[in-house]
Length: 282
Image (tube, rainbow, N blue to C red; front, side):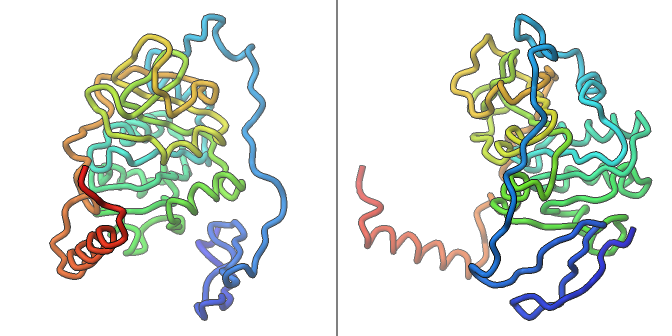
């Protein structure tokens, strides 16, 4: 399969492919020049037959959950990046996939970081075919040098959600690392030793993926309140020792910039907010 094919000129005057990784894509046609057709994507219909009578979805390990979710060749696996460079779950996912001999996976993260350099051997041996998401550090270098078997696709955060919602990317298994969760799968990011804040990047994954696994190091009594990830969307829950390192969330764009241009923009933004009354004492 070619990485890309059938180049055409888009509305911005750039030559872009219409076939990427064997899938058809619509080039940018200009603002309000393209109206998609069809309906939103939907996951498979769930049944109470598939779940315990007491609502306890906890499994013994992440490996058990991935096997039960039907992990196999060619699947799309999604993760979020709320732990940024402190993510401890993604590498484990693909360690398990490699151990099981699974190949040709599409990894669909909301972003990846230097902590994921561990995955480069899996890109080389075909466990992972390609990454469709922001790549920071060694993974970005690997892809930029043309070493990835498939073509990387970068989407904005909103564009990623849209692609999931509209079925452009159909997630087979979403793995959501959550700082706090209950046995039913309700989860949030504000409680627990690895609290990271909101879990908004994983919302679309939870709603539209065929199978959803919540992984937590803080399993709390039902119900986990407040919940941002709804247990109704979750298939399996896994308790691990640690899901992430919150001290490493401050990395990349979340660090205070030293760029004179960006500092000037920040200063002007603050002045604007003060002048318009958006910021005031108290």
